Image 1: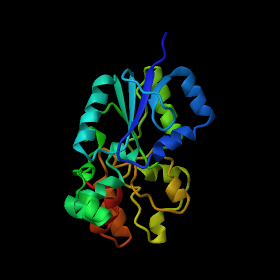
Image 2: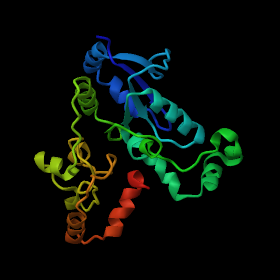
Image 3: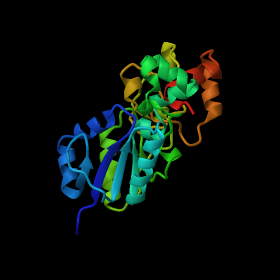
Image 4: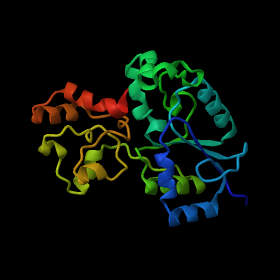
Length: 243
């Protein structure tokens, strides 16, 4: 039986999630044994128009990129969005809060009018094409990536948590960041990362996106308990959860 052909593509991103794949070290060697990587700009020069699984890192910010993504989608049996930029638009979506012409001028000055910088509002991958599976995070968790790929290879639906990061914090007996007068997005952010930020002394920044049905009442109760407001919470959501 032939191995599933896998291609990895990137759009607007820092490519940090692809580095997490490389960082799998021995695990990536095991994965390569059971798949045929036919295109991956960061790791090989070969290209291919034939693949079964397409893995996409990055958000879509230009019309030509949207068209390229549509071609990739048409060729792939399965399309996976990799990391926050692909799954929710990531930090790139912050620019959607501003006039695009002002953004280009602020960043590039007079060069901002050059044709290749003619971008539009940032979009997550599923705002352009259908996405079959998402691997969340900024960057992704390597172990989660391996779990998703292994599940797909044996015909199982990958497990993606739909409960908040707070569950993982409690499991690790991590002291709540609200006790340190920080506004943490753990109550409304999708788990699956094993809460590394709160455990290391940082609040949750929401890089995995919101749970499907966030418990808004519980989040409001937390804010009330610590003398904060919903607006305080919304201000912290801008980094990774701009629409």
